[in-house]
Image 1: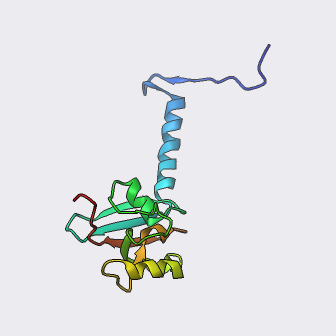
Image 2 (image 1 turned 180 degrees about the horizontal axis):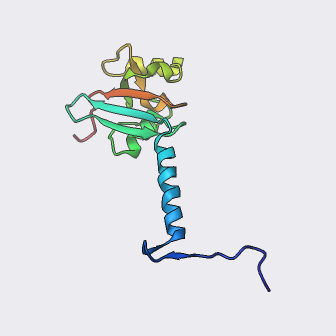
Length: 147
């Protein structure tokens, strides 16, 4: 019984030493790579008050600054688990703050309890990235238990 699908045929270009299928795939993926890399992306630059070099990471829409930090090995306290129940993920937003969601009364109350709050203070768990943007934050000194 014959399949209704067309047969998969692979031709070989002896001069190039590879199949034309592979050559056409290489051309497709090099174009696809260009398209993917040319799409604007949300980036977050983390600066550290303890002198560590800054780190820039790409983030997906819907991720919080806390998510991006933790997914990239950046230690940022979050005692409540990222549900706006404490002030341990306190950060300073240096750039891109206008694109972040507006600060809530609950977040503002917890920021008032944070160590050294400033006008640009936010909680990393509440800074949800909603669109293509560039955000720069500073992580203030943190006090980890046992350190």
